[in-house]
Length: 427
Image (cartoon, rainbow, N blue to C red):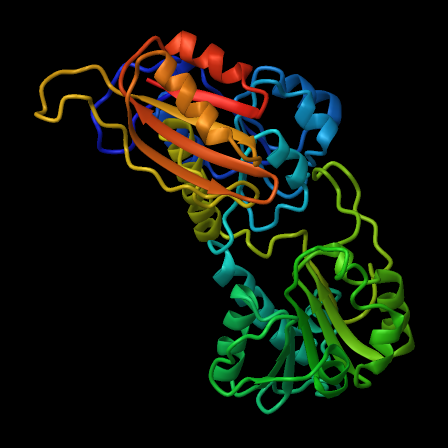
């Protein structure tokens, strides 16, 4: 399979581009589909997250799959997709994909770790203010016809302490915005991070919980962060403090949170993510915190602004296009990252010439693989003009540009190598 990177002239490819099937689910922004169609790929889109049986049907012929956070790709689903070449997660997280299994299949997974940073940070700041002013409760009473001008329980955020758990791209953005509003900012991260502005790192999570008036979470979903905030941690929080979770639903024990809100130990909460989320708008939403006062509930829309979704679509689509057309794996979260130039014609003087073969070879990372590859290429009388290699512990990715030769025979011999995980040739 092959194509041409943006700006290069169209060339004949080893696999017709209109035969490359791309499936985009979960209402990915239209810009992503448009970019992929502009490359000549056949693109199918759907708005919701498909159930397992429908997903398996879609994957039988798919070469590229685009998902968001609701569609899971465990090993059994990946193994039912024999033609799948790449997965695009049009979001930040990739915990919905079995990344290790995908790596073992030579299946790169791409995401967009930065594109919705600002949107999530702005939502968090809005919730800090809304909780401090009890705006949701005030609005609900007004809609019910009750005029209540009481200032009880309403506070300015200026001078109050915001505790940020996870000082990465989003957490640090929240830090800057909060400090601009006059808040005092403290943070905790498992890795050393440079504090921005006047923010201050605290020694551990317990210290942060005891000091903060508002705690906001910005950590990934891992074994270490599951129920990071449970009953014991909530008890350490200041009476009347607020908790915000715009990270992952598994990070907070929602039952313990509901108990703390009912008892009055916590003064409010804002949740955008939940342990169990409906797959579509037709499923009812259930949660222990529904109906509780001063609780803001949003349906996993932290990064769902038009600006963020368009930026994510462009970012991930561009990465998928470069991988399919050129072989570049830069931006992949699970396979070695190799940045590649476009393919060059064999004639250095610019005259019409057959384009060189580009071998894209995922292999088990064991000694002797390169020697075996070189012997296969040399056995067909072809010269290697350039070579790119990166490895991880268990897998390597090598790209060879070779002079034109019998491409089909070359592919057959490469697939026969015992170390080969997956191989494509662009010509």
